[in-house]
Image (cartoon, rainbow, N blue to C red):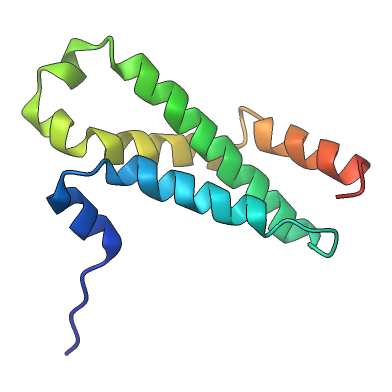
Amino acid sequence: MAFSIDNTYMSLNSGINSSSNISSERLSKNIENISSQTDDKELLDACKGFEQYFVEQVMKEFTKSLEEFNGNSYMQCFGDTLISEYAGKVTDSGTLGLAQMLYDSMKSRGI
């Protein structure tokens, strides 16, 4: 039985804000992979990655003003994970529509 520890676990133990680091790394990789040869699914996935990152950053700024996040030790430890999951749900639902607008704009420009 093999056991591996991923970078997320190591980042959490190191005291690094792993959720933001992982999200920004994923966003950077998605953007770097966009080229004129990119198919529609890859482009839409990159746009969804951007939307998720954007929603996550907005939610992090919003939660700075909430007592539940600032005074709760559970939220201090796992709040970034919770925000990341919420941002993923918002993006998956498609209700915000930022990813679709970005996708449509890039397709109309021939990207």
